[in-house]
Length: 101
Image (cartoon, rainbow, N blue to C red; front, side, top):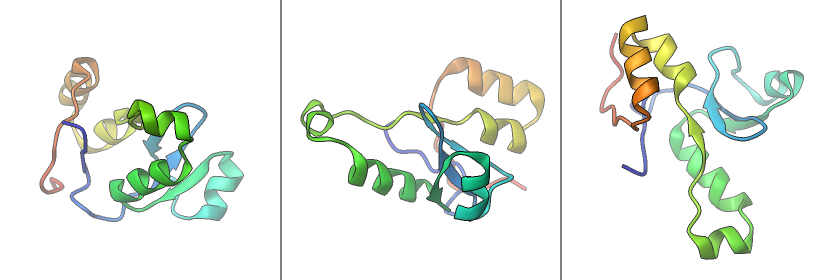
């Protein structure tokens, strides 16, 4: 799968670190991201895709480069340790239709 929305479209905040996009439960707006030294992207994975498309260079466009998205922090916050370890070690992008409660 190329596009994953682990939060089911809910308002979880995605940021851009040094080498990948990731979900951060402690960042909720641009000012918090600035203090943390990361770039604020938005509330949904759709914002990540838009940010990536708007900021990639021409060479990346020709290569068909896709964004590097790290789901580890999301998996660890939403699933039991055993399940999150399986998801992280499997390196698969899982498509979540709805956020589990």
